[in-house]
Length: 167
Ligand code: ROI
Image (cartoon, rainbow, N blue to C red; front, side, top):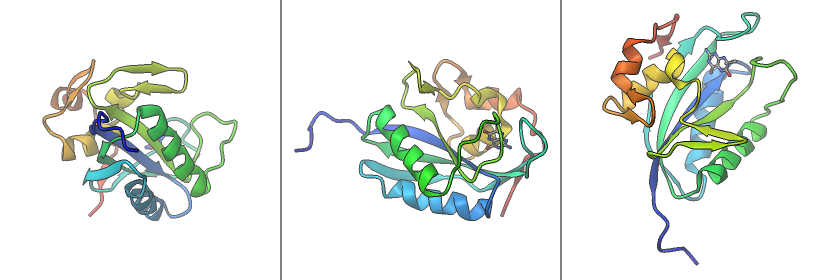
């Protein structure tokens, strides 16, 4: 039976891909995320084109950010996202920060600060990543990022690093 005390929490998910038709990977992931029980889409950013952060010998990325209402605890949400990554053919390689068909990150989960072995929220790289901050700002310009400050202030301190919005 449904627990009447479960709450719907507003969460933000980062999407990234640089292999096997990245824009299509992002669109398929969006559909898959909306099909998770206990998740509802609230907003989805434009798609953005971004040069790779990390090793440069890999293709450019397509990135986006999705806002959802989630009834799932954060670790359950993460597991569902990992399943979607695997379903879309993600192969985990030894190289750190290498190319990937699909990367789904829990960026923010309500006002919570989470430090678990497999999950740090807000995402630790959030404030330094133009490909996260700009799409996030597009759909949540008033957002207060727990422990980090207002999205507009984070954005002011983050160069665009070649990020381009796709139409
Ligand atoms: N670089 C860009 N531009 N976009 C990403 O989504 C992305 N994801 C990563 C690393 C390898 C850090 N670089 C990235 O995981």
